[in-house]
Amino acid sequence: MDLKPTGPATGEPELEIFEPLCAVFRRALKDEGLKYTPERAQILDTIIRIDTLFEADALLQRLKDEGFRVSKATVYRTIKLLEDAGLIQRVLFDREQSHYQLVFGKKPNTLLVRTDTGDVEAIDIPELAAIRDRICKERGLEPHGTRFQIFASASE
Amino acid sequence: MDLKPTGPATGEPELEIFEPLCAVFRRALKDEGLKYTPERAQILDTIIRIDTLFEADALLQRLKDEGFRVSKATVYRTIKLLEDAGLIQRVLFDREQSHYQLVFGKKPNTLLVRTDTGDVEAIDIPELAAIRDRICKERGLEPHGTRFQIFASASE
DNA sequence: GTCGGTGCAAATGCTTTGCATTGAT
DNA sequence: ATCAATGCAAAGCATTTGCACCGAC
Image (tube, rainbow over all chains, first blue to last red; front, side, top):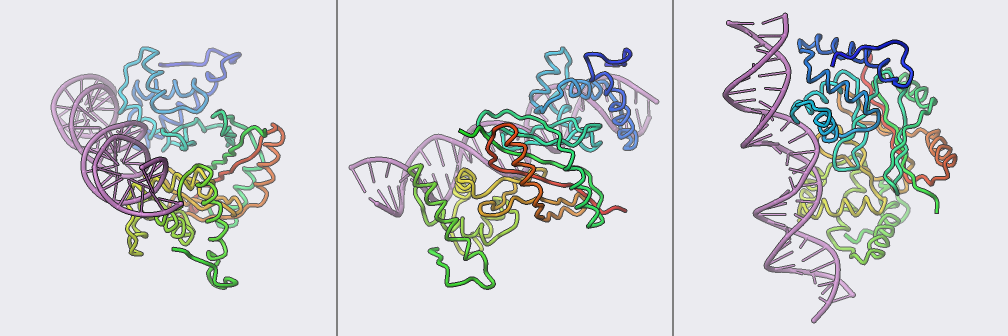
């Protein structure tokens, strides 16, 4: 659980990203007087390697598959901490469970949701950031996040 | 509950919108072999007059305040029918309850969510439709909806 | 030794569903 | 008559929480 970069990442980009994410998380915890525990480290590490949308349930299952003992309660509690720290975001909700996504250090992305197949594809639309900033600036607000989703199906 | 337009709407635009919405709903129901009941009519009518985000709970309360007896179960069942018919959309979920919004016949709008105050403002951003269409066209897909949300707070 | 963390199980609360009754065609 | 809708109360189910025990500083 004390993953370290082993040099320039070649096929495993998540190694490059673990250090900064981990640092941000630790800092956020420390600022709140909370602790960076093995469970929290393992959960963050696993989320980074999932690298698509995930549900609390699936995350728990994956942690168990990897031989790590964590309780459901801790998974939920850690997800909330990671949200508060701005590392992940809740992104989808049309299904029964909440779906989360790693967002820190990533460009805000758009989810293209196939209403026929259920597939979800993340796409990058650079203009959106500019639109968001314009809207906020007009009102003297500071943007904290964006969520853009397009629902579509194959034209028959 | 058999609301009819009383002529060119002056201060109450919802009268203009009721007829087409009602027609779409009735058609959608008929296509499924379902019935257009007084409860469903009243619920649709009330949603139209709410004209901001609403929760199932608040909708039920409002129906009761207007002296109409409907059960929670029917409200939830009707909300689902209206979603299926494409008249309303579930839009927010970061809070405990689902929030819905009338979407039929309206431009897709963006929700500006104040993370400090909790206020939600709907804004019209015309470029988004073009972006959506472009993304879909590139992939040979047909757009069914869009959801764009910006989270922001007052810059201190 | 003091705090916070964890796991378990129980509780919460929105939403859904089973069932008997009612209503529309 | 038939087939669906309604209301009520009971279930479902993801998520949260209370509590006793454990561990880090």
